[in-house]
Length: 85
View: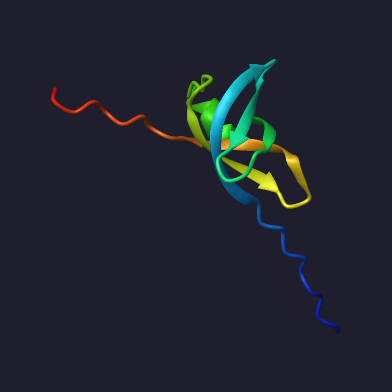
């Protein structure tokens, strides 16, 4: 019997950016590296644990290598705590 080659799933590209605005359950993210806006939705774990994302938050997103205009938010960066408390 001939061996079958398994197709590997394309890896998502992970980028970071800042939330610009919320649009009907999705968010517009401005990427840090380049001047590009990506429309993103929350990933399942963020929805499951009810993590809130608001404009101004710094987030990590995953984007398909085939379509850089849509993606999903996979992590919300924590804000640094004020020192001196």
